[in-house]
Image 1 (cartoon, rainbow, N blue to C red):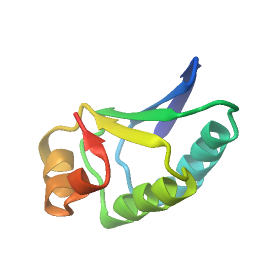
Image 2 (cartoon, rainbow, N blue to C red):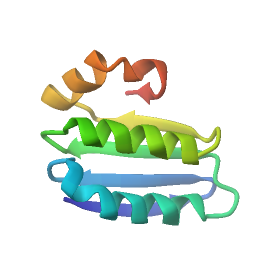
Image 3 (cartoon, rainbow, N blue to C red):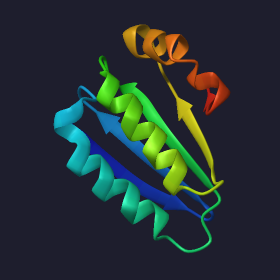
Image 4 (cartoon, one colour):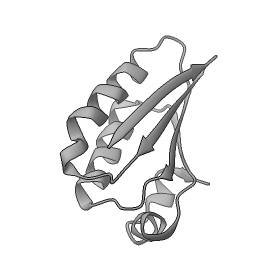
Length: 99
């Protein structure tokens, strides 16, 4: 799993690539910490277009990131297939905007 981070003005974009599982927790935490240290940030978009699978640990990582983001808007985009199903079953649409 890889994560690519880029910034535009007050927005951050995280592109995930590979299976989003527990083995990825260090890389995800490092990338999200970098994002949250960026001054003036108000929106974060996480792109799942290159993710085919996520486990329950990934759900936990997203919840912890949401807590650490302290009210910043987090949007999950390009969720498809199994990933979309897992997010729907977990009712993550009540926590995050999913597009």
